[in-house]
Structure formats: C-alpha cells, structure tokens
Image 1 (cartoon, rainbow, N blue to C red):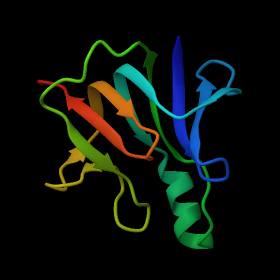
Image 2: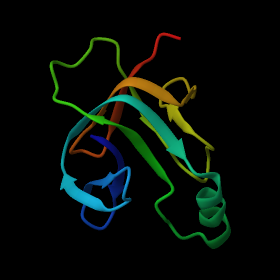
Image 3: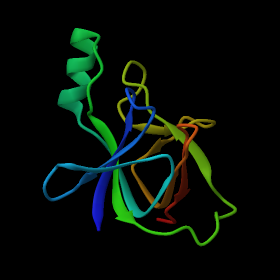
Length: 117
C-alpha cells in the first residue's frame, strides 16, 4: 500500500496517510518504507516562512514494508524549512530526494538507504 508519512508534532509520532484518499489511517512509532520519495511542497514551505507557523508540507511517500534487517550503508536525513528546500543528509548536507529504503524511528529520526543512481 502506497502511503505518505509525516511527523505529527502534537502526538509525538508518525502519521500515516493513504496516498489515494489523503486520509490518516494510522499513527505509529516506527515505520519502514521502500521505494520512497522524500517530498517537500514548496508552496507549504513558503507559507511556513511567511507565517512562521508550521504546517504539513514535507513527508515521505512509499510502500509500507516489514524490516528484513537494517542495511549497513544508511544515513540520517533531516528537513528544516528555515534552512533547506529539500530533505538533506545530516552529515554532508547533500539533498536527498529518493531512497530504496526509509526507516522512520520512534525518536523522530529518519534514515535512508540511498539509491545507487
């Protein structure tokens, strides 16, 4: 099932939204997505910058899957609308748009296994 997952700041978890209907179908502490796209809607980001008020405009879209083990080569990614226009690798600052696997953890961290393209 294709979903969009975003950080829910009020409930301190991840909200899982059905990609077709746009309705929230679950709230989870951890989730693993495959064949993912990391999305930042620029109009939503611009609204955050203009109003200084957070809104849901960044999320990870992908297929829910079960974890078969965490790959060795993963990196932590982050997104800050005040500093970046995309998700970035935390260490290098490199923009990240897609990933083979994405791990969203209970600590609020996001890790990706980068695509080899």
